[in-house]
Amino acid sequence: MKISLIVAHPNTSSFNFAVAETVRRKLEQIGHQVYFHDLYREKFDPLIRYEEIPADGQVAPEILEYCRELADSDGIVIVHPNWWGQPPAILKGWVDRVLRPGIAYEFEEGDGGEGVPSGLLKAHTAIVLNTSNTSPEREDKVFGDPLELIWKECIFDFCGVKSFYRKMFRVVVTSGESERVQWLKETDEIIEKYFGVENGL
Amino acid sequence: MKISLIVAHPNTSSFNFAVAETVRRKLEQIGHQVYFHDLYREKFDPLIRYEEIPADGQVAPEILEYCRELADSDGIVIVHPNWWGQPPAILKGWVDRVLRPGIAYEFEEGDGGEGVPSGLLKAHTAIVLNTSNTSPEREDKVFGDPLELIWKECIFDFCGVKSFYRKMFRVVVTSGESERVQWLKETDEIIEKYFGVENGL
Image: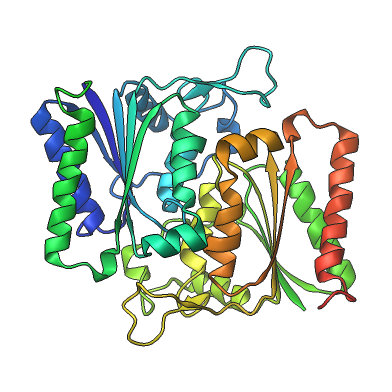
């Protein structure tokens, strides 16, 4: 099967990349084809232009290629740090530009854009793996964990991806080697659980 | 007083710009100095580089100028559309790059970055004005309105701005002329209430 793997972090030596590489290796080991995108390395342009917004808008060829791969994916894995309760800007731009009408969702004919659209993505499962420097208690009590609403409800449920799992590895800044090794093992297990040969794919 | 006004939308003929222009006119009419930024027109680069992240990181002069103005502001107004429960990527990049340690917040000496920082912004009030094509019922029930958590808790409370007000104008796509005129009148009233001469500034 085909799985999209998107990572958004400016440092390839970061723990985010260790997680993304673990996901890639595991997926390939299972036998999947991986559409891997390191958005920073690819210099992904996150700024949607006005002419690009409508369903029949002008879309650059490189964006159409991202769209084609995403529409072709049976599963999606996204890896990014929690920055201000949101993804980094480059990944927000990937959402703004790649999750297009006609690719990720569509409105019914005659709908002016205010109605409830249908999700179009054929991927059955989306996994989001985050790093964070905030404790679970403070995240839940003070910040309310907006990343959960964003990815689960606003994005993947909206686009028709009904199976969703998210894990936040934390607190990264104070973690030691053994804790990080454990987190990568956990990453392996998550991929096995959701994308293993005996688990639905 | 000095007020930062930030607008993030790719179309200067949009209702977002009508709102932003209304804010600007009203603030100037009251007698405030406005630091106005149309991020798309200024071609704001939203991609933070790795070397830029630490408190003593390498920051480009144009970013330092945005930082200086924000630190100098007594109030902040932000205008943007609700895209996927988040701001457009260009505005997310403004958050990533301009709300820097030493400008917007700081950790106590000896803190490794996992603790609770102090907010540094001197602005006493932040206003966020959004446009949306989702009904209030669907926003609250299905999406959980992550923009409220993002701006109120994750960003402004974190940076020490304690007075916060947010208004979402909706549903824009089906609104008529008279409704939009009413929304601009409401925009005027919000600015008068929070930044009027008799109201705390």
